[in-house]
Structure formats: C-alpha cells, structure tokens
Image 1 (cartoon, rainbow, N blue to C red):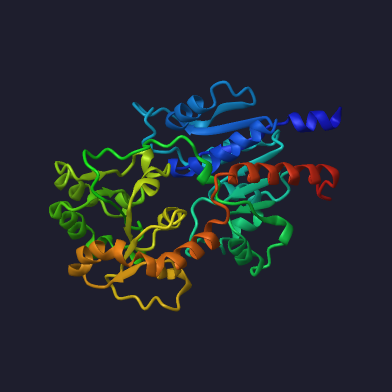
Image 2 (image 1 turned 135 degrees about the vertical axis):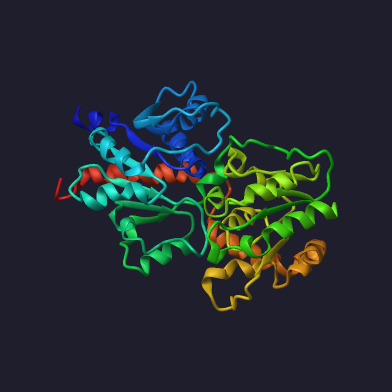
Length: 383
C-alpha cells in the first residue's frame, strides 16, 4: 500500500518561466502521464494556463495548477510571451506544495535555487535542458543541486562528467522539443513560395550580430525581394535592444517579411522547421534548425577569431560573413555551396541534439520514472 501511495504522489512540472521553456517540458509531461504518472503542471500566468489546459483536455492524469502569485494576462490565449510574476517569491511560496510531490521537473536554473538553498528537501529536482549549443552555462553551481540532469546528447553529457558530475546523475535522453506537436504553423504565412530565410540574432550584445548589422540586414533582405524573411530574434532581445521594434515597424508592410518578437511560433519550432536558410550568429536556434541539415550563413561583424573557440563550433556549418555588404551574396550562394557543409552539419546536430526523432520526451519520462523507482528502493540516507 505504501508503494501505491508513493506512486500516486504527483510529479510536479514547473511552467514558471518564459514560454520558450514550454516545448522543452510539455513532451515530457505528456509522456509521464501516458506512462501512468500523476502530473501537476504548475503555471505562472493565464497564458501558460490556457495553452496547457487546451493540450491536456481529456488527460485524466494531468492537472494544471496555479502557482502562488499567478498572473492574469489579458488576451493571452494565443501564447504570446507574458510578463511574469517574480520568480523567487513564487518559488518560495510554492515550496510547501511541492513537498508533497514525488519529484519536481524544471527546465531552468532559477528553480534549482530551492534544492541549492535547502539541500535537505525530501523531494528530488530533475533538470531538463532548454536549448542546446556550445554556450550553455554548464558551470552554474545551481545545476549541482539537481538530483538528476537530463541532456540531449552523449557529447553534452560528457561536458558534465568532465566537471565531476556523477555518471548516474546525468543522462542523455535526446532532444525532447523535437517531439512537441503543438506548433503554431505547419506552413508559414507567405503568399508565395520564395525561399524562406530565418534571421535569429542572439539577445546578448557580445554574442550578437544585431547591434552591428541587424537593422541593415533586415531592411536589405526586405528590399531585395528574392527571399521571404522571418525575423524572429530571441524574446529577450527587445529587453536589451528596444530599437528592434523600430526595425520591425519599418518592414511591417512588406509582403515578404514576417516579424515575430513574442509570439508562440517563435519558440515552438515553427520557424526552424519551415525555413530554407538560417541566418544568424551564436543563437542556439541553429542547432534545432540543423536537426534537418539545410544551408546556413553566419554573421561575424566584429571579426571574431572563432576557429579554435568551441563556443563558435556551429560556424563550421556554413559560410561566415565578415562584411555587411557580403550578406546578400552569401544568402544567394548558400544553397549551391551547401554540400560543402552538409557533413559538418549532420555531425554537429547529432553531437548536440542526440536523437531528434521525436521520442525524446518519452525517453526523458522513462529516465525520470526509472530514477524514482531506484530512489524508492534505495532512499537517500538523509531522507
């Protein structure tokens, strides 16, 4: 009876951050419920609530629950990234309710402040990756507070093992987001079938092409007319570069331009799945794009000597442009020179994403349930 009671305790999944985290978490929550686990999805805003309530309709094992400080957002049913309640107060107020969970699953480091500050907590925290790439903050000490870390690939797992993480605490389960089925667009909203370029600059100035070339690049592609352009930078770019809204307004009337700064399509895989050419700098979106290798062009406005820097490993997957006036020419020849980069792209994607077939959520769920079964058989000494 005690074992049955233990298994009925829910697994808490924390949807407390930006909407970009949702596609990394929901396939795992969905698979946990399909495997028979009770799942409590804790949401921070009415935007999160509307999406998860819609997707979980008919799923008896899933409850969508409001976290303390829950924020109502007007007109948020379309999944636009909402303003969030303060994360730390939310977590501290939520903690007593999490103590009844069998485990807590999160996709960001902030939630790991709880086990970091309170290592005696009886509930284990599981951290899954959100995004991939060579610039991940692997040395953040909060990650060591997770009882289990789920990463997409064996290469990524190796980066933690070299940092002293116990092998049993870090598991490679594939790219969970590849199994996210609730995309906004199956085909992009353009009137013709011109090749689609996705421009996705990074939001941090020292990693981004935006401050040097971004506005000029967007306007040049729009005016040229040979491509349909999706301009969809990281959601946080507007926080550090509010002038991005001016650029978007300037090209808003162009039929060959689709701008998105906070729509759910920015984060649900719609654009990386549908684009023909990737244009960017160091955003990890390129790794998701390369799950199906296609032409890439990378922008290096400051002439970074990147060849031996692992933080720029993705730049081996396409032409790297160091002069703004060469961008359109590089886009023009990208399909013709793609064969030069296809092998590097496939290897890079496999190393970064692991298995991107769409089964990552199910593998992650199986890893979590296996971990909990082992923990039930051999409880930690401190519990």
